[in-house]
Image (cartoon, rainbow, N blue to C red; front, side):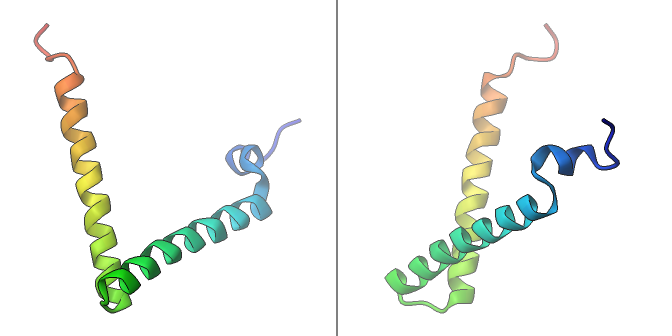
Amino acid sequence: MKTIYPLSARRGGFIGEMIRWFIMVAIYDICIGTIANVLGVSRIVACFIFLGVLLVISFIGYIVRQKMAPPADQ
């Protein structure tokens, strides 16, 4: 059976994508709300702190990946 949207069919369709999106939003809201309450800052400042933490994690992952990858001249 061929589908028009194979990616959305494989992931559970429109309803599955909506549920996934709501779960992601809830997790991000919990993280940002916790940062705001613990540090005593506004939610927008907590959002920027959260984004900064994600940026640092991704940068560390990039550095580790570059160190683990073999050089291109071999």
